[in-house]
Image (cartoon, rainbow, N blue to C red; front, side, top):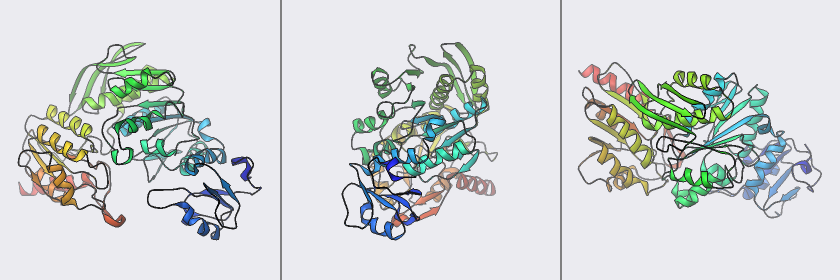
Length: 477
């Protein structure tokens, strides 16, 4: 492709591919000198040229013998250029973006299931896993970098996908990773404290989420108006065609009532413009009722028949690491959940309490190099809502696990157990459970490793360790 098709007025250069990582540059690639947190892509421009880059996209001219396109913001222009390079693939897909603090993964999986039940082969991009052209795919981020994202959209179309459901993170919105994508629909789940290490304030966090509905102009907006930030979006005249859902507000377009939840799943009544219907879902907890309701509202907005959507809800199983029950025939429940924010931890603990006929045990920690302000908040929530608390390590990254645990304990006013060895903590919680109890292992969910300093990642899966703990408990019985 000619460079001037991506950047009108640019030098006449033939471009064969796009790259933003100098280590992955191939001959005749266009290299984007992206400024990051730890490094600046301009520093690697010479290396990219030595590897065969045909031209550079920069925010200031470099003293390098290579064609250069100077733009105001390399990262933001990268998304637009990638969309053109790959032939605007999102315009050939029914693209649905799911954003919010909690519930993105479950809602995205549900919406994909509802679209597939309608006969539409649907791709998926998200935290737990991705599917491209009907085949599982690995992604490094919740929302891939712009070049990878647009390439994934192209692969979806080439693989027969008619639609795509993707999680859209606040980082991706703020950094312009989804620039150049055209969204048929945007779905907002909720907004609670998280990522304040990046966004600094809740208002800044909200404004990043808002971009999906304003700057990116999603054609339809599906909004949880039980959430105050969802109410703000619904009242925002720049948000196009809002459709609302709620459990508490009778004026919402889609509503859930008569909610009953148990270990076997949930049952409730969905009401909408077409009437009401009782539905059963294998997903547990009031928070999952919101996820089901949002996915149903989105599916109906995209033209899925009510009967098709309701039947698919009843078949859609649990998402790995999202209130995932680990059953080895024991007389108590063991649940693995990704809850890593104050609000999500409170939601899953309240659900655990509803499902328990005995005590509630919780094992959790907080990630290093992330929002430190939530650590004592989560400690206070665990102390208030669980009978037995073990504070442990999550992904400490560059921080000392003991230092993170100390900050969590700062929010707890009663004696609780703590152990930086996550495996030992899980083993102890399971060993201490009795008939009717619920053991909640929170924070990492589906993740397959623990992250330590210098990028070290050690294999670790909460669900696997929970199964090992149950086997050990049986042997010791």
